[in-house]
Image 1 (tube, rainbow, N blue to C red):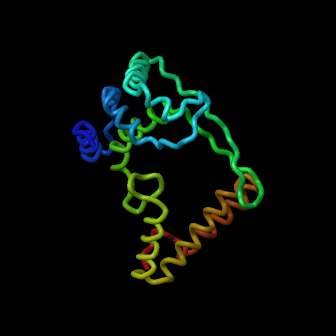
Image 2 (cartoon, rainbow, N blue to C red):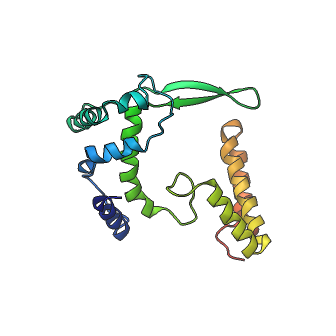
Image 3 (tube, helix red, strand yellow):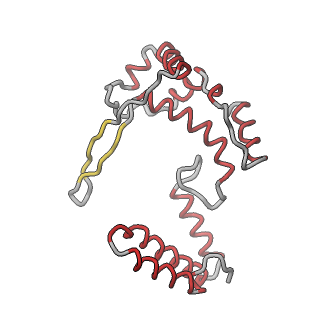
Length: 197
């Protein structure tokens, strides 16, 4: 991480309410080239059909031109290419594939925005965070199971299961029914995630 990005992280950590109005200067051709080198070389092409191998042939010029379009406000993300892959149950899973330049711009922006917003996450958050994933979350669940009373875990699991079920099915049933279920869940002290046991 660059010194500028580190400083951005420090500022975000010092004052969680700080607003950043000028971060465009952090998008440099050098950062864009570094982001390009970190893209998957075997990834499918987007709607423009440009592959990593093709873009790489004149990467320095391509990136300079892309950077200039960003600075001039002329860059526009391209539509996503939609493909369908078969699922085990016989259905099709839709996948959207961005163009290579869009992936590159996204990668640079993710680095900058992560520096700002990573400070806001709780330590127990694992989704879509750098250096964390589902396996880390499962490891934490295992640690908690081994160190906390199981009643504590089961109460929270039941509470979250009720809420998750309500969220997933909210569009398929009467809202009053979902509200009643949430009220019952919040009224049950065993299901209150804020209580310590």
